[in-house]
Length: 376
Ligand SMILES: Cc1cc2nc3c(=O)[nH]c(=O)nc-3n(C[C@H](O)[C@H](O)[C@H](O)COP(=O)(O)OP(=O)(O)OC[C@H]3O[C@@H](n4cnc5c(N)ncnc54)[C@H](O)[C@@H]3O)c2cc1C
Image (tube, rainbow, N blue to C red):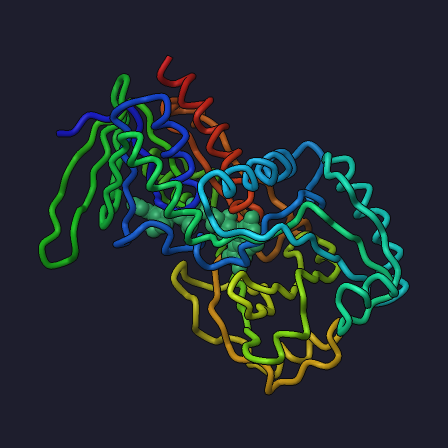
């Protein structure tokens, strides 16, 4: 049986960032990932936006880690050559009623410590985005985009350079708390020639994304249920990508469900339109019953009247690990980052939906601080 100081469950952006952070301080760090490679789940199925922190409730973990993660992300990308673009973004009010809410959004961002926010009029919108129609907009200079796949791979490479062991095709199937350790059962390999293995870890970090509720339940903690909220994208390719220059967002959903269907000029020059938001059954349900292109075109026309159905093709989709369900009145939810109350050598990272990509370097530091308490 292998012995680990720290075992991280899940090789998404959060698990890999955490592996890098903890392997700078401790030996015998393991990360186990059920899929053949790291970053194949939510971490490669998102908008790749480096958020600023304007949307989140004051004092929430989302606000804290997004603002700090934004700063850390630019530094990290520059230092380790991860492709990114510091483009800024416009949150555009389509009419006078929406424009009245821009001031509140600006205040919320300022309260969270986001700098440089400005409300701009239609002339400046037109100068930056000549095809976008809006009456006013919030200019958010600290927003940008990053190649999420390169980001995950870079975290993982640095973790391995520090001596961490990343084991793919390794699914955690059960856990048993012992006196000072947790015994973790793994199924390693593909169906035909899979083997059962056990690792005994002094500290376990649950970074299992959509499955974090099920992994927590393996330790007897049934506090959370994850509801997959699907976000679907369409894409513009070819000459019509010139309709958008940077990042354009609508006003966010009032009850916090999503930030709204936005336009993102990607690092490779296409334009993403999305993501939508629909609760689905099944944590692997990326494609069943997807919206048609006509629905996307209709929605997108509010801010971009020139867009036509023929400009769009269906793109990928991703599943947000929501910890609030479809019946909740307030859909904001917050990240859960804590030592398990009953099994204190387990660290639970649950409900890491957007802005989880942006927040990853800061969440990793938080997880490393909790690990230091466990290993003290
Ligand atoms: C549509 C969409 C758009 C988004 N846009 C943005 C954005 O623009 N900016 C932003 O900051 N955030 C965004 N996000 C959020 C961001 O993508 C997530 O917060 C982040 O990727 C979560 O990373 P993770 O590592 O927690 O989860 P994941 O990437 O899901 O990784 C968890 C990993 O755990 C593994 N795993 C699960 N169970 C087990 C097990 N039993 N054994 C072994 N391995 C296991 C899984 O296979 C998976 O690889 C978006 C999300 C979605 C869905």
